[in-house]
Image (cartoon, rainbow, N blue to C red; front, side):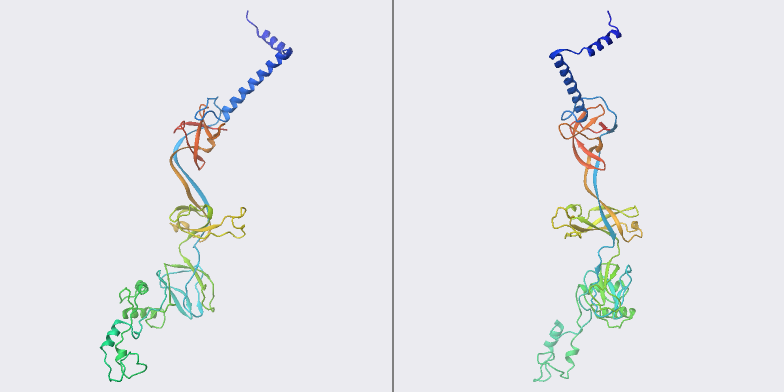
Length: 423
């Protein structure tokens, strides 16, 4: 005979109203409760913490976004703050002596042949080259005892009287009345790389009539006189060590350390190059990225960006002002200057200075399996795993984290595998 719903309900109510009597009945109830608790913990452990090393038992599917394991290239990028400008200002090596009578404005540019400043109302001219101006350039009289030509002339010269010393000899201490010695001496031609450097500039300024070589000749002196005439100077044919200053190219005038009326000093005037660049005070402990030639991206205050290249890295670390003691745990890191050149000056626009952000690639891995970082779950036995679309859990080994994604690998991980992002 079939049991009715009313009868079953009555039996259930009777069981609640009349609980099992005695010690045995209480034991039965406790054991049943314990079994139910263990079963619940097992289910939670499977869902939240994972199963075996590779795959865990399946569990009822849960809600959440489904994504695919993809194969791509991960790039770790790091940003540091920098300052846009023209680089470190350097003092002009002014060798002229006297009083400053004119200085150019800060920010002015000077090209080859232009005036850098005036000393005693004489212009100091900019020329291009790497060798400093370290001596006067001019034709000079041949000194006694120097030069093969003079030595050969002395060997051929005989004394006019038996009691008179030979011209130019050790006993020639005054005017002997003879004109043979002066007429036998030709002007001495300076030779050297500095002569070639100067003649190269003179030719670039449009002066001709001489050969660009290592010799300062009569033809060079004649061209110098024409150049001096154009500058409104006395036409001597000689160039003083303080008349010109060499640089690698066009310069931009920096801050003036003197003013008209003051004596020339080491810091009378400073200069920089004309190309804008970025200087980063990089942490000395995290500056492994700063290697000459490394490509970076510079984000400008305007929001645009421009490609850059690390041009130089300082070798001396400097502790920031107000920092803690050496090696102090609470003090800021020491920094080293890193100079970045900008490839496209036009992309910078009219900006001359301001804060910028320099982004560099710290590490890159190619052709690896990746998932969003949010897809990772913690496993009960440690490490990380992924939950598949079917509700299984697979263990994974993580690699590079970058751009919100993470490199993953493991026996059960393959490209295209559907995994769930936990809510």
